[in-house]
Amino acid sequence: MGGKRQEEKRKFTIHEREFWFTKEQVQEEFGCSKEEAEEIWQKTPISKATEWLNSQKKSTTRTYKSAWKKFEEFTGMTSDQIIEDRKSDTEHKWERKVLDFKQWLLNYKKLSSYSGTMMVNAVRSFFAYHYLDLKYRTSEAKRLSERTRKTDDYKFIVEDLQKMADVADLNEKYVLVVGKSLGLRAGDFLKLTRGDFEAYIDNPVPISMGEIGTGKEKVPAYPFIDTDAKPVIKNMIDKMTREGRTKPTERILTFKERQLSQTLKRVAKRAGLKTGNKQVRFHCLRKFLIDNISGVMSESKWKQIVGKKISESAYVNPEGLREDYERAMSKITFTKLASENEIELRATQKALEIQLNMMSNLPEDVKKRMLKKIRAVKKMKDWQPVEIEITEQVKEMQNNNTRTNNNCPDGEHCQRIVSEAELGGLLSQGWRVAAVLPSGKIVVSNE
Image 1: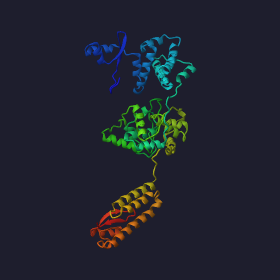
Image 2 (image 1 turned 45 degrees about the vertical axis):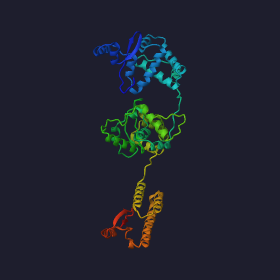
Image 3 (image 1 turned 90 degrees about the horizontal axis):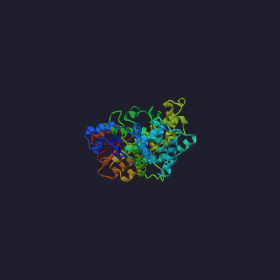
């Protein structure tokens, strides 16, 4: 039915042909007033197929509608005619007809067995909705359920996801990184709201989101937010705040399901991934998570996390799941948790880099050499010798400037490294603070 607004249509028979009309189209077709069109509309019963389709989720309706059009083409009958015929069927004619329908889809319509099975399931859903279930022998049911995809899914590795995250914008990164962390199906992922995350986002990772309802199997999932996903979610919430979307019920994304896979395909291409004839879709992220967490926990535990049916006796407290998920994080994340020492080292290195860049009397080649040494240090225990060496080099440069510049006696018009005790006297003489070294020493300048 196209367009942003899905209008209800009803089926009218004109000159023995059936047409689908909206209320406005009824008024135009029959040349009547708006009130008369409304009356005609109300008297026209909706078809059995429309009644069934209206009971489905929006995401399912599109697929089922396509399947039903093909089934009516195959049978040459309307949905109302099919129901009446099924009611009087005592010889399982419609069971056989649906079996033939699948072969027609494969041989005549050239669909894959996967697509054929999906359409057969849609047709069986129609009969079940009207309490006229189709009943099959085991061998027949097996024939109906056989399906193989024409294309195989691409199997992500964590390096792929990092490459994609590096070239993704915020919305794309949310789809990629949070989709991978939670492992939810597309429909359940799109239902997530600001309130689902706000309650827990400041907790230490991995963050349990508690119970999240799922649409397909109608069982709860117990997903976790990993180290990659936490900062992305916080950025998305900040973005929503800037846009004035502050209600807890606001959905994070307003995408349609197909846009999730389209987003991943676009980012994979931008990142230069070589996917060959494999298919990139949102479901690949769910498979990635399952493949990695299933190696560190029991089947019932990973099924509980991603929202698959398990026996009631296999249920585990979410805190128990958290310990297992934490073990899996080394396999599924590319943002590694930094220790306190690593954080301190990075902060100290950054501070010294900034201060070196502020020292204008240092030649560029000397600065580059010092910065290289700073960045080469990987552990805090190795930092002090480097800091002492750089401080000595700065002092030596200062002394050389003092000896070679007649207009700079005793460091005047130069930079000096002094202690806090020496600072007061120099400030009173007109010196200014140029930088503070991590050791506590101060660089002053009279330039």
